[in-house]
Length: 252
Image (tube, rainbow, N blue to C red):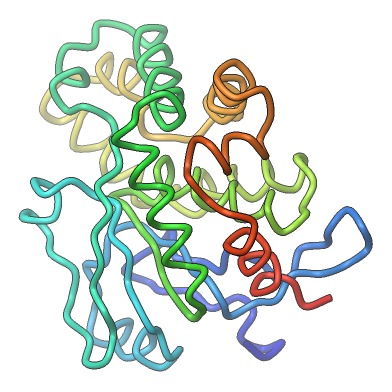
């Protein structure tokens, strides 16, 4: 993207953004390249936003949602853009409906993030996504809210590119600011149907929290020893794929 396009936004997908931000710095003095990988929540787009999305030259849209989620809101078909599906485990709906307090909701979210690392189904999905992204940009990946499954893929990409943890965390937390308006609408619906107390119970499932991301990183250390081993042994990424992702993401 050009400098004037660095803040490309879609009004109907409020968590759509460039994985590289405006060109995040790396720990060795480099900088990320924008316009390669994009992340988003689900793509229920206006005609204007669909035209904007078509204009960035996507090669593929990668959907991390479950078949049930996809059936409710399928991705738009864009001529020349491959639609790909890698089903990663998200927040189990049946667990959400049974929540009785905010602490229980936070515990659920840490379990979800740990599942990104410990569950073979999720490891297969995330490994597949990263191998697909290594085929080159521009590509877009997304889930329902663009915060958990999508947030984990983005965090892995930024780590691979050499971005430090504080920047990764800051980028991850942007979701809370990006989705403030749409989250307020969801909270209003919860209050309407279940009362104000229910909003406080469900709030931890509607946001991102560094504690959730830390739970996933902690599971990486517990299960694999370090992030490099998780990428190699957990996700099945070879040195070539990791080097290619790094090269694609870095401008310098």
